[in-house]
Length: 83
Image (tube, rainbow, N blue to C red; front, top):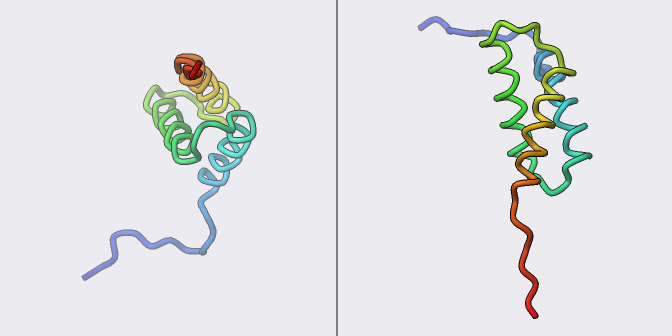
């Protein structure tokens, strides 16, 4: 049975390295957001931008992801303190 996809070289794809850099910058800024959420959000923004036919750059992905994260963080209701 032939292989469907063969990757030459063991390292991550260049696109994944760029995503990882964006995730690292956002993780430093949004410390309360879990890494899995950041990773999924960045991947989603990247795919959406490609789908829209944009020239996808890490800067664009970071800006859009940051706006979504700000909405997420700012929409969370404050914790109630027990009096």
